[in-house]
Length: 109
Image (tube, rainbow, N blue to C red; front, top):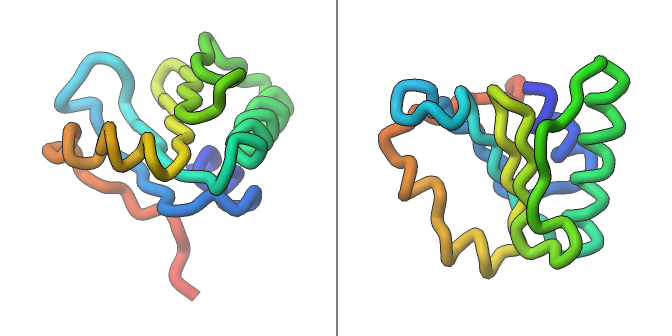
C-alpha cells in the first residue's frame, strides 16, 4: 500500500496495515506507524500529503500535526496514524482493533 511505502521511505518504524472494513464503518484500512520525534512525524505527514497530491488524492482531514505526538490523517478509505513511541504504546491501536486482519505490504526479498 502506497501510504506504508511512503512512510517507510521516510524511515517510519513498526509499520502495520489493518483491514478494518469489517469491524468499523470509519475506514477500510488503518496504516499505523511510529517515528522517533515530532519532526520526523511531521516530515512523514508532509511527504504523504505531497505524494498523494501527485496522484490527485487529497486528505479530508488532519489532526495533531502541530503537537506531533499522534498525527491522524484521514483519506476516506484509509486513515493514517503516525505516533511517537509513547503514544503508540498508550493507545495500542493494534490491540484495540485486534479483530482486524493485518495486511502484508512489504515484498519479500
